[in-house]
Image (cartoon, rainbow, N blue to C red):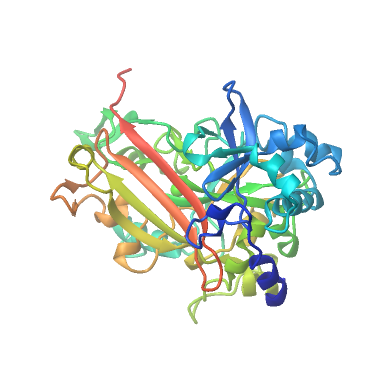
Length: 440
Ligand code: CA
């Protein structure tokens, strides 16, 4: 996309004034998808615009989308985004263009009057899980996270020799994906420390969060047909925030030889908004530079255009709200801030790698980046890093300390894309409060 085209599209304004505030995060050009509870409690599809949600199902009912293709119109009336994700890219573009036209300041007064009736204040909308993902894969794409975690466990060789060749990942658990705002029950399991060679069993003593971004797959690929790197970005529909809750004491006991299992599968939170890739166009940037001595990606992971524009400039922050802060009316403590552009692998590389063995991705599948950490210590995207493996508690602004999360602690992730001359594009928030364990 040329800069001229970008500027023209991104200078459009909405008649819905709250969308034109440059820092509102939900401008005309973003229109992130969500699923919210209607008056009857049933799920409906919407898009965020300014301080409101536009009810897309209602737009279908009042014939505002009558000339769009039948599959996408039907998909707009579904209970989640899965049928919409499964539509063709052309249909996604047509829907997005139509929604922008309906909300554009050039829209006819008669159109505005109809659209107005389909707007619900965001503050009144109960946001639900947007996608029912059949599969969830978690990568490990931040070299800074991998290095810092590696230093804790293998100081002599923090990065294993495969890291700079293979986008490392594992198959996560799709059934325990929950929408942000869902409370997270402290899990029980086999835990370190080991005494007399026997592990304990009980509630984790080192519950952690991980700041990540989730990528939702639109049309997938048939089994046995890898997706080449130059086509891989086309499979991504949009992104959300993702918190990969982790029980570190369970993880360190169980992860060898086959990787994470119950230390991760008890819950993963996703934010309610799915920001379409089209809304991220101004924030695309070159893939993070590799050190001079690093190997080039193998040919199936290397594409000139992807290297030039495949990364995303997105600020990701984590906050902690403890019960004491809540009681005192204090703001949440900012734990860290990092940028998605610093990942070692681009989204297209993750998708190309995932399918390189012929594995089929399905519409709605969720691929997470892995913890997004930067090079500096205050950019670390989890407590494991921030506390040096639990050895050095962090000091919070109100004087409290934390190694791991305590019951009633709330973790809040926020993500936003910012660029001068463009309105902010927000991913919203992904929240989760920790509940006490439930005994077996
Ligand atoms: Ca993770």
